[in-house]
Image 1 (spheres, rainbow, N blue to C red):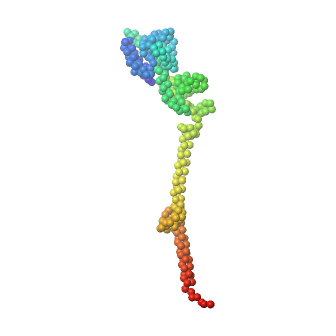
Image 2 (cartoon, helix red, strand yellow):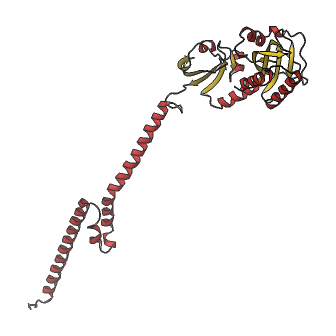
Image 3 (tube, rainbow, N blue to C red):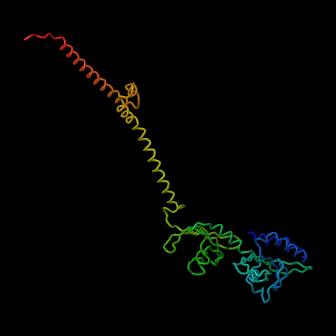
Length: 324
């Protein structure tokens, strides 16, 4: 979209005027290039015969380069009404004073030049630095090994792939030709015995295909999978249920445990009867009262037995001895 806006601005604001002035053309092209030089490599205009009319930044045209045989030129001339995006390639039209090699993506279109009352066709070329797309795609891919994104054209030729080096070495394969024929949307495939989900979307104006590939390593335990979230939800539900069951069990058993503790410490605490008979549920209170009554009955029987023994001892002390 950025390349398209630059091309439109160059054509409709600079080139498409009733009478084109070359000095103004060069000045406007320089201003446009300076505003977007981080992403642009060059902007150039060629006549219908392939002769260079103007280019920025100011560079010397390479010798023995037949512009009319270049893909960007021939494609634009054959389809006048369209914008044409090329595959990544080395910019080979101009000499770079720093002897650097630039990988570029070209956007070309046919434009009308009106000079001195005469209208002629020309080809406008905008070369974008391939590093811009590469940085964008690298940021999009991130560090997640379970999914990746790549770009190809409508014929399946790769524009960007995170494993491009492996593909060139033939140690990795991507079936881009078949993918390019699919309709946009969600597709499920098997690759090397593994399931993959492929999401396809066509990029407007370019005809390129943005492809997202998600590898299903383990449908249950792989984070992000539907079954993974179901498994986690069930596990969490069971854990919460276990916690509340344990809490409820402790709550229900506390009165009986408290009663047992009070019984063990009955000899050490005063007002034991009042405390034990008024704590807990109705059943626990009833049990406590029953136990207390039993203890009281035992205490009464014990006291009665002691009293009887004391009375017998007293009667024994009051007897008169009979002499032999």
